Length: 172
Image 1 (cartoon, rainbow, N blue to C red):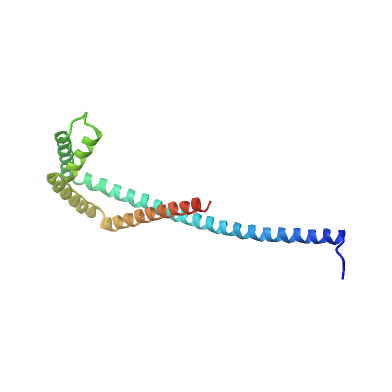
Image 2: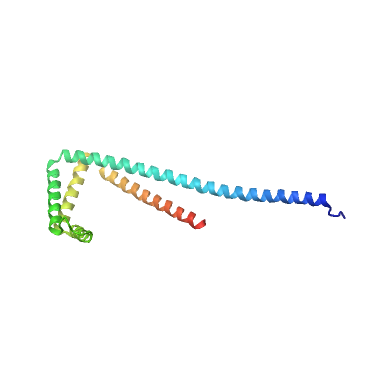
């Protein structure tokens, strides 16, 4: 049986050191791959978010253009909107004055939202606007649906992004 002499100890130390480096390398490689996969997922998620935001902008712009055309071709609808805005201002002044506190302004806003006359007129104008827009472009409802879906996707992606950040913070 071979005795442990100085050269054997050095050789054994070198082998141990080499094995330690190998283990460390594999551990680091594994964690780097995990981080890369996580970042890849985030990049993919980020691309999805950007696509959804782009869709949102596109449909929003289409709808804005259709609405502008509808208003140009329906001056009576434009007049009704202006009358509604005047009524709204009158109601605001009725409920609260200029120098009101934030709490008083908040209460006034709540009263405005619950005002039956304003609700009724607002609903009527909204329905007439939708009809006028559909006259301009029969795909209006489809665009509204696409816009709603894109908004939901953006909200969902932003929620996922927030939860992955929370996970990262917990792991640190």
